[in-house]
Length: 125
Image (cartoon, rainbow, N blue to C red; front, side, top):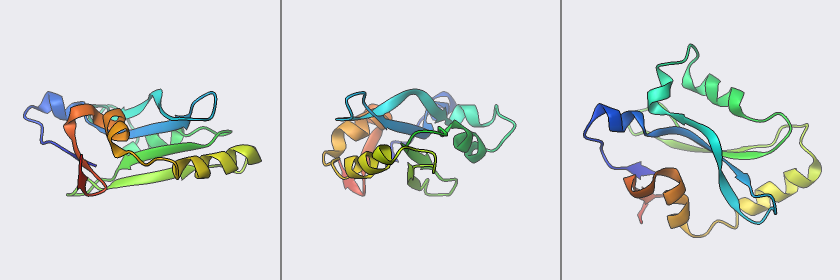
């Protein structure tokens, strides 16, 4: 995911460092998990490093998808599929098959950053 350069430090603080996705109640849609994100501005306020905070936010008994921006010059985006051993078998089957259903990049980009996202998977939106 590429984002436009922000002009102010306040805009930079609102960039997402990590976001979590889950399946909707009816298991038919992948949705952004409300209240489960780490903003760049939040990173300096925690004692732990951002990745440790991210790992603590993963659920113990459910699967999740997550996007995490790696600390590098190019802001590499890492896709994570989380399925701990304690997850029921049905969840371990539904989550991987649902990921393959995502075909349209525009709704995903809107969930990640709205108009700030300019390209996804190396292709412009």
